[in-house]
Image 1 (cartoon, helix red, strand yellow):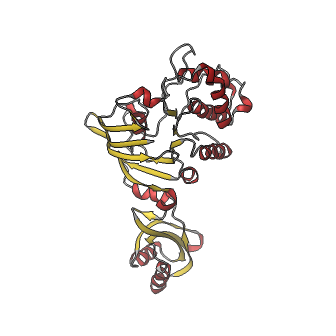
Image 2 (cartoon, rainbow, N blue to C red):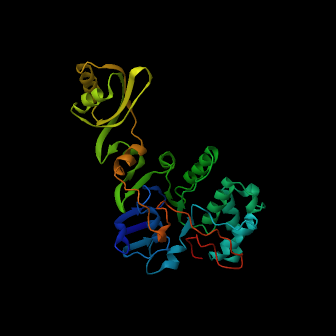
Image 3 (tube, one colour):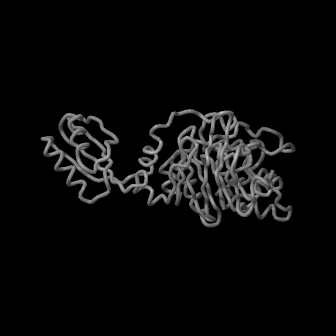
Length: 351
């Protein structure tokens, strides 16, 4: 559904995205990750037609997005982080208006609006005025907008930003329900959300693709190598524990260490993914004369992988032209124009 090859974007001498290549298959839900300044926002804006690449190619389905941008946009439903809605309109009125802007035939508008309302789970408030809705419902209206033309590809930019835990769970379940029928590219900073909703992830760092793979398997790798994570709790000086652990063959590094009450110290250790590694750590700690109170294996999370890859991030923001703060950014417009004017500028569709 998406095929990107050697995509590059320069702002003067600064390269925001460098030689980026990846593909997303039809029906996949893919997480698009990276720290601030990684190039996510710039990449999404190139995919949805807001920015022209400095080099490279983009195909959306069978369409060359650079040669035929309008045709490519018709296949995309884009939900920006700050959804630009018209607060004075009722939900179904707004969606009907957006459907017409997106080229939906007049005879199909009602059917498409009804389907989008059901998929986004806002059919029960379809007659409500948008400005009176809670943040969670406004996010769902934004998703209904992205769905109303029934595009094969959905690009969702921080769809759970600002929501409470129950609303996050509802949106996450909704995204999962779209898999198969739609291809979803989901950009978010909430890594547990990615683990719960996405089958595959792409991790960017400093404008380059650093890691991609299935969510279930990528958690079991650190930089492409089999790894395990051990939690060690004992009594003694933290430095003595670190020395003993780092002197153990197969231990790569101590990824976290802090003192607990009662003179205890807890350390998390990244090590080779061998079953016997825990026994070797136990012997090393005992040989150093340290008191071991707890030793257990922990599951490697996507957060652990993300942290390893992006440890040396400079924290620089992306240029203002790509969203300003470097995050997968919201559109700066509030969509405040009257319905008789242009569509809200945060939309990545045929309008």
